[in-house]
Amino acid sequence: MNPLFAVFEPGGDAATALYIVAFSLFIVGIKMGTHPTTAKRGNLVAAGGMAIAVVTTLLLDGMGNWGLIFLGLGIGTAVGVIASIRVQMTEMPQMVALYNGVGGGAVALIAWSEIRHGAGHEVPLDELIPILFAGVVGSVSFWGSNIAFAKLQDLIPTRPIAVPGQQVINALLLIGIVVACVSIGINNDDPSEEIFIAILLASALLGNLVVLPIGGADMPVVISLLNAFTGLSAAAAGFALDNVALIVAGTLVGSSGTILTMEMATAMNRSVGNILFSGFGGAPAGGGGGTGEEKPHVSIGAQDAAIKLAYADTVVIVPGYGLAVAQAQHAIKEVADELEKRGVTVNYAIHPVAGRMPGHMNVLLAEADVAYENLKEMEEINPEMSRTDVAVVVGANDVTNPAAKNDPDSPIAGMPIIEVSEAQEVIVIKRSLSPGFAGIDNDLFYEPNTSMLFADAKAAASEIAAEIGNL
Amino acid sequence: MDLMTEITIFVLAVFVGFEVISKVPTTLHTPLMSQTNAIHGIVMLGGLIVLGFADDGLEYVIGTIAVAFGAINIVGGFMVTDRMLGMFSRKPKPKATSDGKGGS
Image (tube, rainbow over all chains, first blue to last red; front, side, top):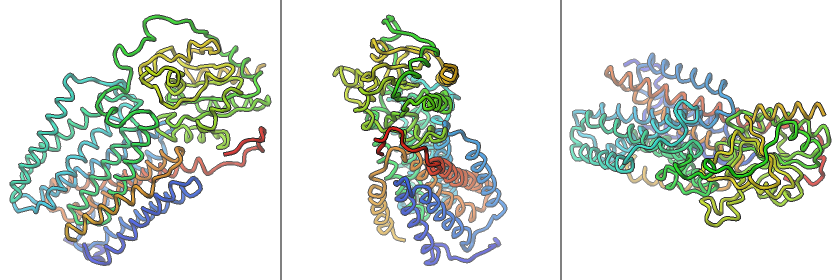
């Protein structure tokens, strides 16, 4: 082998010291990422740490195969740059899923390579166990994230895909994986690559089967959970390779990702276990009630909506998942601009889980140049609701359902909601009366002060903006 | 490094992770998730080491793909996070509050 720039001894003090600098920058970067004013710099700090870690590794003594290394780096960088420039802000969650998936894939491949390297001679258990863990979790994360990506990108149906006896199959798969891992562990004097590949395949299947039955609306929680898993698997790879940067960075992501996942689930009044095992994330069969009988509701057109809005003093817009799907944020901003021209006060009520993940709606609206000051959090806007003339619900459903407050038997009882029904008038822009992801009817649609505007959110908003302009 | 030292580091890192992100405004959840996602791209180092010391055909292939995957994770992750956060920072001082109460 022909080392190009052999500077550091692998595992030596100099390399380790630089790794310590790198992970310190990660910690500082994450810390800065928790405050609005420092978040952007924090991201750059973490990226700087990553640059130090990568360069240090490239300078390790004994490294070879430079052609392939630069090929891999080149392809990966090109794909990463192009994808991040092209991605629409509404597609952000699936982008994170994809990046998370390739990270998990990298971990699984590293584990495979390590097993291959170890074939034929003894691999100590303190190295073998992390390799097995990394292989299993990396593979689950890769396939699970790809399914999450495919669902959010509408490549496969977002509704839950039920596999008969799926809990049993998952349990059997998991048991099989554990047994296979133990068998490799017992024969650690010559770890079998064949069995390891079988483990990778079984984990791949498990990743698919766990995520397939979960509905699109729960996907963010799943992505966040898989993000934490990938972090842990990276830490495991660090144990196998004796690399302190991997151990610390991977673990940080694992623990911070776990907290984020729990926060997301709490905001949706769900538990993580419930999301993973109940397959409830998309209208469950027979759970509705809105499909059969038609309850009386008021339906209006864009022109009526425009008139109601134009002659109001205060308007609150409640954006939701449907707005993200329809990419209607710019059209909604047009409506708000037209209203503000006429002296109407317009605010946006942001439910903690509006959009596709917490904070996602803020990103979408910021993209449409909505001033930060006009974004009101739920606790802030609810007391104002009774003084609001018109509340416009765009693509939000369960988060506005008064049943969460009024009906203790409702499946969403106790979930925090935006109390739009307190407003003088409510306009709901929605394609149909169909239930949201909770699979239950929304009482809001049938209240006397609610008008339904059945249309695609983007088309309807553009039309309303035009109508207001014509008044 | 011996195993117990590594486990010590691991346990401490778990607690640092919990402490460092405990209070985050919802607005920053997506960017923060994206940033931590980029940070686990650190696995690319593992790919580099594996590929840098690889010596058979299949290992070359596996290692190259692992490095490419890791690079996508890192480059894409940090860039997308930067794009998201860029949207918050460009606030062109909106017209003075029309309703007076505003607040934050």
